[in-house]
Length: 133
Image (cartoon, rainbow, N blue to C red; front, side, top):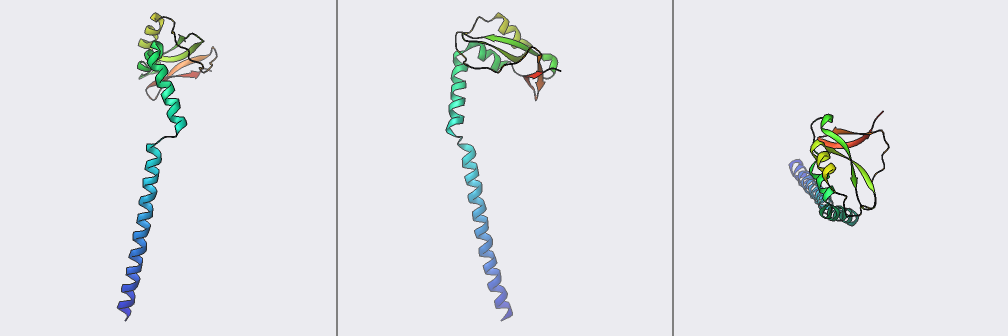
């Protein structure tokens, strides 16, 4: 009789464990689906940025020249657009190409405003702007 009781308890425990495992798998699938499909606002921002980069020669130069290994490889460069001029951080090659490039014929609409004490630094192998002290 005691063995029969243990058998029933073991069987019930196994069913509960399987149900718990199924719930965990469903949660994992839901989280994976949420990561695979970004929200519509994220898609629209990415699409707009990609569209501007395709049309803009200067933004293409910046995008292709961001990599670095040390701070000495990064420079602050100004990119001229129809509506405004933006300061960006690029590597030495990108800075040279931007100096030779003509004024961009696209409108950027917005860029981060940095003061005169902004410098270019290498962070995680990408040139980026930082305020100097």
